[in-house]
Image (cartoon, rainbow, N blue to C red; front, top):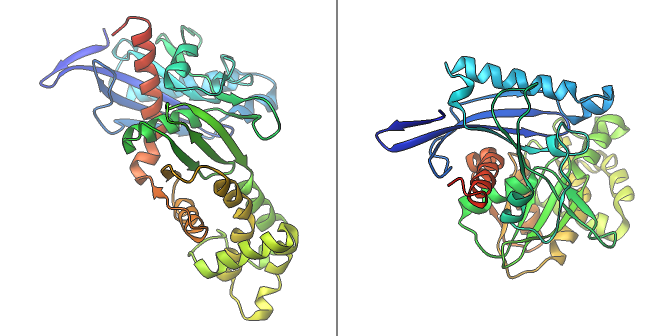
Length: 338
């Protein structure tokens, strides 16, 4: 039985899994009987395996094998057996059409209760003997602006909303290779997703063009607000491609690599800021992610006159797991298990 007794009452052990395009991360948590996480991660392990690997070899076996390995390693390191774990809770791309258990994305507007209602608790003996909850992603349909998908960011949002104490409308910006801007309405429903490839574009330009000699690696080592603003203003007036071409010119104007890197990022993120400026102004804005991207986006938002709050780094780190466990808790409630 996976429930044990401590001086604080019943304790449940859970393993969370967050899988994306290139990485899979597993964490071990202790929660109370109502599935509220009551500790920092007790253990974690990460593998450079994601759905891209499954697509490359045309088989989901690589994902199943990595997941099985991660579960075994966590159990062994913590002197646990499968019977000590109530469930493995999976968010991200493992439930996508290129994952290991396909569940269709939930159509917006959607709230945590809808995500839980579409989640599925299954047995997968080729992976482990522990029940596995697969959580679906979220998608928008309609015109080109509203047609979007996300897998995993919904759990990150649920976790951040919980820790930030937000139960109404808000906007969440999640920086990364693919930036996500997510708008939540007053009913707590995800109603709009906007994506950009700013991170991928930055990597491509700074690593595979002549600009690699003009900017530092990483592109942002220090934040220089006036250069961010200059780059954004130039891109807004003349376009992104002309703005990027001016990065090479900056050294002739006496600017160093860090200043050039900030100009480049200001130009690239100008489109993201335009999206942010079009969203409702009367609701809180939170910025997740890790440093230095979180600080970079906070500075850019400030330049555009948008007040935002950075999510605590530790909260941002484990938010996908907090949200996934909240979905698991709601799933159990809907099925009369708690």
